[in-house]
Length: 168
Image (tube, rainbow, N blue to C red):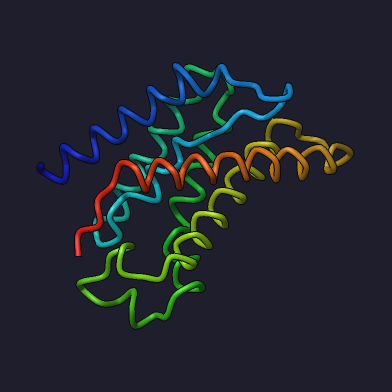
């Protein structure tokens, strides 16, 4: 399948999954998994960064439009898309990332998990910080970030394992 077509299908599929199903799940009254950000993890690392940033912003804006959240998801998704490579450079060796044959599938599983964990927690912290927007609610922000983040990470990793193939 053409890579561009595959990424467009992932974009549409994850957006629809988030909008139609996951936005209506509120486990225990406050856990609302956000797995649409898995698209940022799956975007090829050697593609144009500008296209990643524009696409990520549009993904977040799409979620915001249907969630009536006023740009919170667009800001958080754009932020993790921008800092995806710098965080990956912290986790992996620079020589591995600079290789023309670099793929996420070629690095150790714990490094992939660390990347997904880091980006998800940063995304969720930004979302909940902008949602509450009060320093007095810092305990709620951290609690919701952690609980929702763990659930989102679990579903994202499960989806990535089930719906992607290891092309080596």
